[in-house]
Amino acid sequence: MEIIGLKLGNVRSNAYVVSEGKECFIIDPGFEATAIIDYIRSRKLEPQFIYITHGHHDHNGGVKQLKDLYHIPVYAPLKDKIWMTDTIYNYWPYDIPVDQFVIEDDEIDFGKYVFRVIETPGHSEGSTSLYCAPYLFSGDTLFYETIGRTDIPFSNHEVLVDSIKTKLFILPDETFVYPGHGKPTTIGHEKLHNPIVRPIEENEK
Image 1 (cartoon, rainbow, N blue to C red):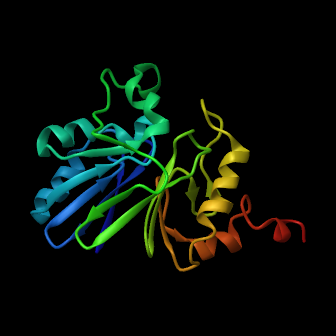
Image 2: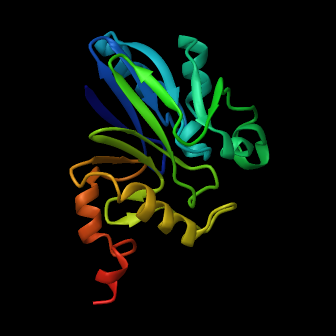
Image 3: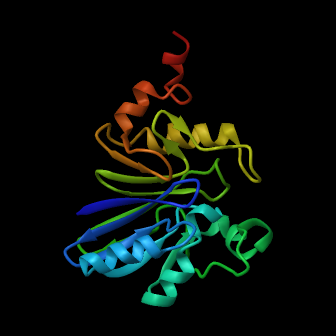
């Protein structure tokens, strides 16, 4: 499986194209999808679906363009539905087209791989991570040595920290983490070096 990250928009949000052979799927196509389409065409890939980790506009702005072109299903977290259906929150003058809303432990098949939805609220009420060992796409929940913002509507710092400690830090240390912004990391690195969410006993030393 090959994972390519593309930085999109003025906030440089990460979109990912995950491919195996000629098939691929797209995670968090933010702002607009031209760079994603160019990459897919350059590799002659066949998109299978789109996954949105959470509902914020910098992660879903390219969804409509991709869906109109490829006619593929779109998966998104149920608890972030308001961000995709209420233009006050999603910034776009239209609803984000979602075919299936997902919840904790839902599974999405991609060839021989099965990706599992992990609900990781805090950055938004419905934030999710998508996991297929040893890969984790963490959206705006966990970044390299930091965490997602909690100064926006429906966010909560304590809930976010708890999501990371109880949902993500239980994954194997060698898990590769592909975040919504910034560079990749691993669960092991974050457990040792993330100053916000290190285990309590380490913060108290």
